[in-house]
Length: 138
Image (cartoon, rainbow, N blue to C red; front, side, top):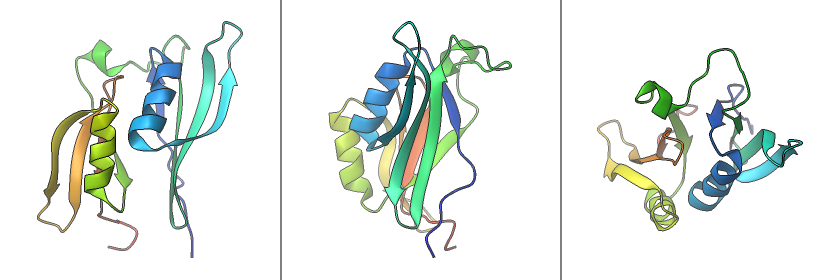
């Protein structure tokens, strides 16, 4: 039965337009909704990824929007989490991301638990882990 995750990461970027462009070109996300701001910026965006049983989404907006006490990775000197995305062909996905300018930090490589993965940092400083491990099936 097809499913999607009920948990959706929400990210903030200094330049949300550039982040949307990068996430679609490098990682293969698809614009679902982009709400423009009065100044030409982006108030809110929803980007989907995958199809069938492997569907997911991230939401994002500008760092200038006050949202509790969220900080950008470069404002806190690093990241405190990593976003994991299931992909079928890790090597091809990594090659596309690298060609689009992604900072590949590790891999592709095979993990002890049977996943093939790579880790990349996006221009906003967020870490992304792309792999074949499917926790829904494990």
